[in-house]
Length: 325
Image 1 (cartoon, rainbow, N blue to C red):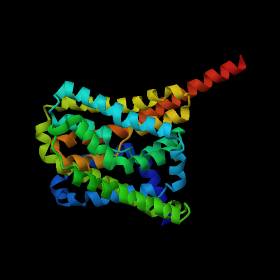
Image 2 (cartoon, rainbow, N blue to C red):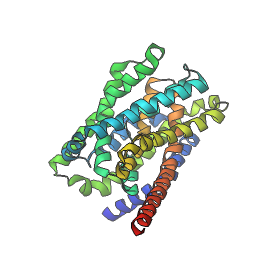
Image 3 (cartoon, one colour):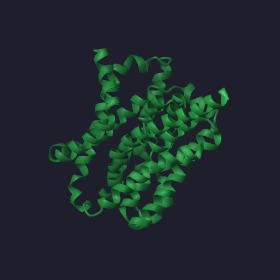
């Protein structure tokens, strides 16, 4: 059973860039069947968050706190520079009052994505750093998300901040604290012990979150057809820009490991949380850019991985030639 669970997890991670968009399509196709189950999304999402946090202890968090400069730079790039670009670009294309602008900005202020850890590991970045960044950013989300919404939209977007913060605490903070506490209690052993069971279940929960949220916005698809020719390229450009912001913003550090880590951190977001918040607190149309980003985020992560590998090979080749010379 353990080997089956681990094999399933490896297969899912290998084909995630196809499985997640496929889940989105299935959500639209079977919307009538799935719509009654949409209320289960917060519980599915909470389990995904808990599974992620099982891999992070106080030691990893303490390691990041000893590097406040890197942490601060990552959060500024992810939650200040990227949202500004999203707001300015979205406002120029759709007008500042458009719900699409809310969705574009929302993508850039939600916490860093759990799957960031996988891509950082495959690309040669710092796994302890990105894992701790994901956990800390998740813990800060009840403050970051409402503050950013208020900053960019003020009174033009009416949301009840109290319930929003409470939802973020329940969806993100509580599962994260429980996961870190369990990691400490087990002296870091719990993730490996439970991974054959929790990892496949969390992947299926993630698929459920994507499919159910697609079912929730399916009634509004007809309204989108005329906007798709502009909206789809905009979302692709925004997600690509978020990767670039992290890569370029850390170039001055001259540390390829940090560049890899931060570029994935700024590029990959907790999209399932973004959809939950968009549907719960904004117009359903605000969820559309976030949903579209599901189709874009993983494929662009693959492209980013390829670019990073090519850049590193080129640097290695230059270094080797200089050494020979």
